[in-house]
Image (cartoon, rainbow, N blue to C red; front, top):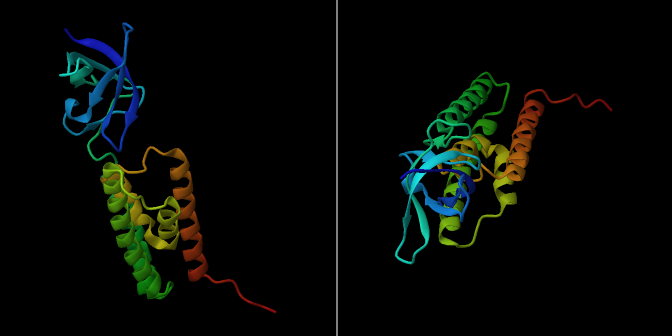
Length: 195
C-alpha cells in the first residue's frame, strides 16, 4: 500500500534524506535511486511511496513518486542548460569586446582559464565531499569566480549538483559575479586619471 509524506530532510551531496509520513510515525529513509530517474528532491516535496524494512529492520522508502505536487523534485541536471547559456553568452560578449579591442585579450584568456580551473575545483570538491576527504575552501572557489571563473563555476555547480542549495555560499557567489562584471567594466572604460 502506498503512503503519503513530505521530504523533510535532504542531503544533496550524499543523495539521501528522510520522509515524514502524513499519517505520523517515524521518519522514513529515502535514497535518490528510489526516485524517478533524474529527479532530485527538495525539502517540502510531497511524495507517495512504499515502505520496506532493510536487513536491520529500518524503514526505507521505495518506488517514490513526486506526483507533480507543490515542491516537487527538481528534474535532471537542474539548470545545466540555463547555466551553460548564461556562461556562453557572457564569454561571447567578452570575446566580442576583446575582438574590437574594448577589452584586452588577456581578459578573455583569464576568463577562459579561470572557468576551466573552477570546473576542476568544483569537481574535485564534490568528489572529496562524497569521500569525506579534504575539501577545497569556499574562499578559494570565490576567488576563482571573482577572477573570471564564475562562468565555469556556474556550470559546475549545476552539473555536479554542488553548492547549489547552500544559500550563504550562493549569495557570496553572485556577489563575485557582480564584482567580476564591475572589474571588466573598469577595464573596458577606465576612469581618467586627472591630477
